[in-house]
Amino acid sequence: MTTTVACYQAIAADKPLEPGTVERRDLRPDDIRIEIEYAGICHSDIHTVRGEWGPVNYPMVTGHEIVGRVAEIGSDVTEFKVGDRAGVGCLVDSCRECEWCKKGEENNCPNAVGTYNGIDRHDGRPTAGGYSQAIVVSEAFALHIPENLDAAAVTPLLCAGITTYSPLRTWGVTEGSKVAVVGMGGLGHVAVKLAKAMGAEVTVISQTRSKEEDGRKYGATEWIATKENPDALKEHKGQFDVIINTVSAHIDVRAYMATLRPHGAMVLLGLPTEALEVNAGNLIGGRKSLTGSNIGGIRETQEMLDFCAEHGVTAEIELINADQINEAYDRVVNSDVRYRFVIDAKTFA
Image (cartoon, rainbow, N blue to C red):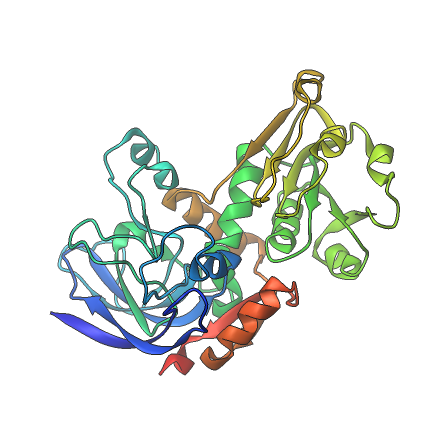
């Protein structure tokens, strides 16, 4: 048996999303059913819908930033009760047995199951994401959403939050750390807020100063505009402990590596289409690192949410109705949003 709920779905790479329905499974013993209140739009949704990241199981319901209320629980559920605020991020399952799962790094499990465009390990059906009225998920992959945070504004943290929080924690950002954030978009503005909340001195590196006022409001104390001054990075040699690069555009990595202090790290979050150039000397001198990061495990995602609750960190959002999704996709591609779109799930019906 299944339950049918309203959704917005992708039917082909070259066609707009359209209203439809999706089947949600009956609860397994460890499942909870979440009535969705808000679903965020991530650039990853767009890449996947348009077939830019590999094969797609159409029709597909995207969305891996999901917040709502628990409406029903399975017989073995112990961590949630009906009425709890709950969320779902980028993963809905993993093997739960490998070394990575046991370390709480389900994101590194070779058999991790994405919230959408994945395959359910039990019934072989494609997974369907948050652009819908409800979702059924194992409690092991559900998150407790703090009640003191605005439900809509917390929604993007299920992806953008953990994507930026995890590298900041992994590379040891703490009180007095000097952090540079490259790009001030959907990821970058959250990275600025989180780094500031961790006690870091935050610099934003952007092409222009168009978002400088916002960046300083969110916690940046310095702004480097690279188009305004092509030699600007040279003036900051050896300044930063960590660089969080949130952009997918091709950049001169060597110039950025020169701004790192000894033992510093440049962490890539974006996916450039062209190969990056780096000299061995960029790494050897000062024992620097060029590395990357991809979301985080469930335990760390909950840690991130709790940290955000303690420090009052949420995303800056534009709330939209479901019939505005296709327009929002175009605006995201054109960098015309400050800073994340969130869909009011009531409008899926």
